[in-house]
Amino acid sequence: MCACACKGFSSAPAPRQPVRGSSVESGATGRALGLGTGSQNEWHGNDVQVRQRRRPRRAVAAGCRKPSLSSPLVSPLPSRFLGRSAPWRDSALRAPGEDATVATSCVQASAFLSLPPDPDFQPELSGAGSRLAVVKFTMRGCGPCLRIAPAFSSMSNKYPQAVFLEVDVHQCQGTAATNNISATPTFLFFRNKVRIDQYQGADAVGLEEKIKQHLENDPGSNEDTDIPKGYMDLMPFINKAGCECLNESDEHGFDNCLRKDMTFLESDCDEQLLITVAFNQPVKLYSMKFQGPDNGQGPKYVKIFINLPRSMDFEEAERSEPTQALELTEDDIKEDGIVPLRYVKFQNVNSVTIFVQSNQGEEETTRISYFTFIGTPVQATNMNDFKRVSLFK
Image (cartoon, rainbow, N blue to C red):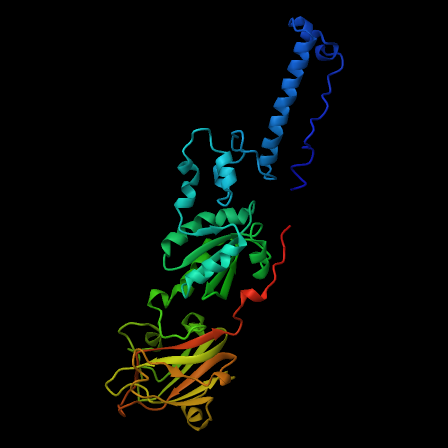
């Protein structure tokens, strides 16, 4: 209950203070109107009842407590200021006989789900699987939350390949505390129940850019079914701005091997490639996919280095001891092939450098159709390890 707007609204009626010298004080009004003492008391009682009925409306206008659903109320605020997550208010503000679909049409017009209870959060997050889940943490009465609400609703329809959820920090205090929400609106991004990024503020353009960034190369419905349980495709964690490829062809550059399509990465002067891949957060690597053609141009001998302080050249890559050396077979580079890594050596990886020394058929150039890593972020969160703590009173 807020202390500002509700102050002075007590349950007992305030004593009526007549104006000194007025006809009300002397009782002259009742006699002038031909009313006896009983009629005057009845008039006074009705006036008190009217004033009592007005008090809940004032409290509702301040957003302090639920109104009674027994009597219809006129909305104290323009409809654009009414939050979606208050069905009791929608029904209370609806005129008698008004069709319920009018009051709930804004809910049906958007594709995101509003989650009032805490227990609903984890099942919805699990249901998203490897799809991007965008969770908006909001608070009733928050101006920035209201400003960005139409844009968030529009994005939920514009990007159906992602899952959009809305969480009220007052109604879901445990979820807000677990995710360390300190301000609203805050947007968290999840994949496979793992928090991968966040965005704060009511800038719709910035939020949409962040969503586009994470949807790029989204595994989505094409997720590989051969990825072991508990691990995920780490493509969304690759920081393309920090990636580099030496000896790449001008026509078939590095970006091509990060997409599952007909394009490919090809070496230029000879068969060797030196690729540096940066991640936007530390990860644990379990295995990788290294797909190539079956015409002899697929990679064969490969050296893998991790967390190098600086870029290396080909000579340095030739003579340096790798974190792991691989000899790929033709089966390894097929579409369904998975190349295991020594998991204990790849526990806290910020960057990977891949040196392709040769290809399967000793061809002049090497081609890589697609590659990605399989593993988990280091900061993967097990929600069962948290206790519920109320941050919002």
